[in-house]
Image (cartoon, rainbow, N blue to C red):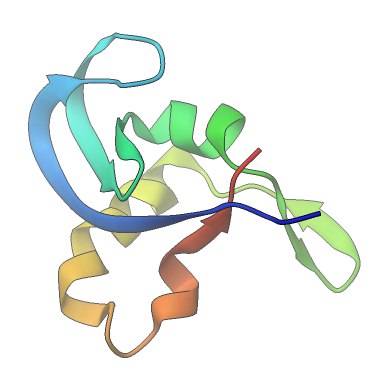
Length: 85
């Protein structure tokens, strides 16, 4: 079984979610399309695991990651990679 990954590549203001079609104030740009932070965190990606417990990033954390993606992608690429649901 292969796992599909999604990488956050950037951020921009104003747009439409590629998942639910809502108008958005903050858009998270990925290699799979443009999504809202809530859709990205809650439905598009699987929960991450840390010390045996699963967790999901908050919408604020996803927006912060998207804002820093262009600057820090080369140094910390694993931070911007998520497993698709």
